[in-house]
Length: 213
Image (tube, rainbow, N blue to C red; front, side):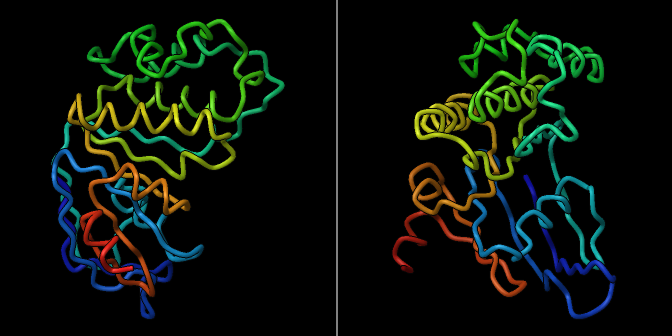
């Protein structure tokens, strides 16, 4: 589904590379957790896959009709601004094509239907994260990419979020790619682990990674 060949990247477009000669193949239906130290360029790799950055050399091939991206938070969102959950999703729906999924349906998927008329700024961090997942689902993506979905989220909402992601992966066959800082969460939910270290990327099945520790 995603194939990366001889990928090199630096923000200066010259050596030394932040990511150096990466060769990866992410299979359809995988649940991939991306791990690594702070500054290891996990988010950089995601931005390259999303097309927000261009490789210095090499290529990335993405065979997908649609990718849903879930950031840690809404960019430039003022929590004091009086906008409801339903209004946020309706505004996003207008940017999508006619194949977009109904707002009620995606809210049901993330167990947030009862909150559709609540102000977004009044929701907890975990509840806002579920709304971001709902927003990403509106385009009916076959790949969902998330940037540390457990950051700033209490344990109850963490469980809810990862139950939703696992269900999307196992029942709806969506490919999940999630940057993680919590290795226990990664090992519990993933089929594969991608470790980024010193500009290199190492792909494991979850069992292979456990055996490497």
